[in-house]
Image (cartoon, rainbow, N blue to C red; front, side, top):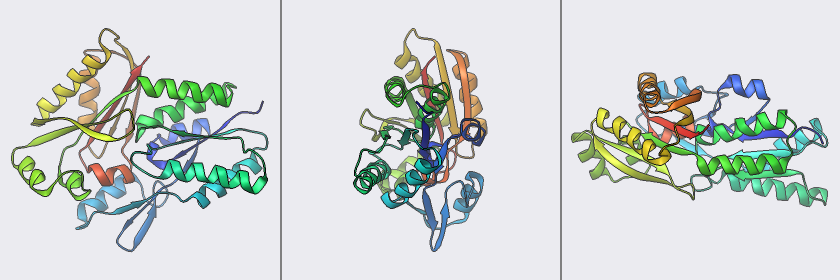
Length: 289
């Protein structure tokens, strides 16, 4: 059987070095500042995005990739890698219609060809490197010759064991995106409230807690991970930040005092997810080693 080809949308925030090392095919999502449109990771980098965001009066808009665009991606890969299964992993269907676009693209190709296309579409039920870690896992397994069925099973198993928390620094972007009310955002800002967010089993963002002050928020996240993993101290960790590298390194240092860290991944929260959580956010993803 030929090696599986791994596809993901750009919100996986997989570091470029890993994308190149494992030959992962990233499909960019689109965002726009007014009339100016950009493909994430191609027309605009994360650092360029946050610089532009800080100067913009209005929140940028984001849009998912259409089914027809995924048809083009899959068709091109099928032509380039004949006989190879395609495994396409995407941001949670609870946050975006991207997964559904990929599913529809598979169905469109099957109708076109009159047969089953060897494409596996997976709903990660997560965002940013929370599913980027699944993408990298799939790519590593593909390199080792694993079948599509084996890869899917392991990707889903790791997804169930993954735990994550987002420390949001400012409330403005949650308010602009409609996740909290304006009054709550104003009061929270005045009281220096730091919300801690996570993603539930259905892939939907929810508020775990809200704490006054940065130090208490970080301490609370460490407490939550200790509760999540109990006596299991051997873990992998990925920390993603939105122009807050100091905050990311602080989390890694504190986690290392309570856990034995094996793989440690550092990456940036990209433009699409960053639109909704804002600069200063740190996202922490931990899964058993």
